[in-house]
Image (cartoon, rainbow, N blue to C red):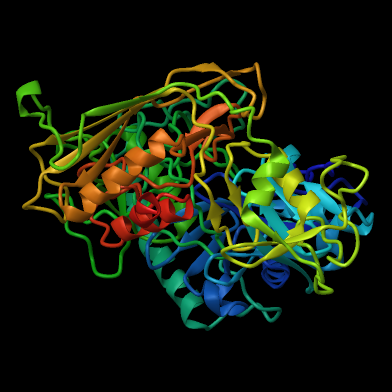
Length: 616
């Protein structure tokens, strides 16, 4: 399936503009912590465009048109979204698409998340799905866009190619996104006013207006203390100031405040999120030169200053000592204050504690009730004796009079022949045969199940594509490696009176086998050895025993595309979450987390790994 062209992005004073006299649909988007550009709704985009026409350097209060976005303000001068209650800032951009594409027609494609709510796809994915839908394609493969999903239009569903889990999707008509032609009028003075020239009198606009004066006073004070400005960098515009890179920012996130941005989809990867980029120079308006915010708000405050009530804190990592602020930091602070329009106090941001204090070998003990201290896995060769037809017949019962309903694999009616007729030829399986899975009772064409099994791991197990019930012992495609586990004499947050189980996974790079996406091609293994942690209590030891079983069945890792780096043909987590942060929970993969042990037990059960299944 061909992918449509990306939206055109150009920059003039931080704002994107389409070519002269060419009509384009305008879509405003914000950057989430996974580096995905998420679109605002058409209603919000119309509101932003209306404000932009009045003042291209002003602020947009999103709560005026969407009650769910009450905390958010967009600063058009710096092209950043600001959240008032947390102080979090995210880059935004003004993107352009063809008027005949999905946003120009007001068509929105959405998928159903685990909570039953509907989440819009990224705009480039939405356009790709709509193009395939208009061409009446029966299905669409999103792998060309970096996603391991198949879209089935007949059943309006999305299927994960690796786990075969399905989600519902829908196509709905909404307000068309705004249309623009040519350039935008020059900006007016801040703040934005109505057509009468009077400023808006709502509480949010009054708050922004009242804090701008305080921000300017702080900036003026900083300028008086700052050293003389350096000359502009070679090739830089007049008036620009060269900011020298400083160790103050090296390798550190600039913010550590929480942010739940609007319409952000949930993520389920077990791997830790991508580390923030490094700030190394003066920011360019309209581009993401600022580090992404972290997932937890800082609570520590500088010992020399106190934060006034109502003023958001701006945690900055690696502030060395308590002396005067470095000139580069002061300059950067001024830019941030201009962008936010609010007074901000600097605080010291906490660092995640990924590892425990050093432990001597004599202090490392075996886990009680768990035999051994490590597991090794070698490449398990497929058993040729397991014929696909024999495996399918083992778990199914023939249905003589099938109901007149769809087979959810081929989307043909059960009373007709399988959609794989002519694609697969098995003398022992006629295309019109229908069977019922013994435990869950769901019915499919036998030929469809043979095709599904032949396209999987071929390990002798079968998983119902509707309810995910597993028949037999499910195994995965985890590459060879080693799993170690032992006790260390340190406690996790929330488990003060309990020692800690440390798990160490180590997988080297290698060559993909026949069960992997690209047999014969090299795969990478980033971030190994990986350290994970469990509390040494009854439930923690139970989780460890089941993780050992999952490791033996090659279910902990797989080879695919990393959600955090986008790298393909690399070792990734396989939908069983692990805690990789020892002494804090800044990344979301640490403690305390009261529901983690129950959640990971549920994830293991979904993979067919449970104490009940082991006893059966």
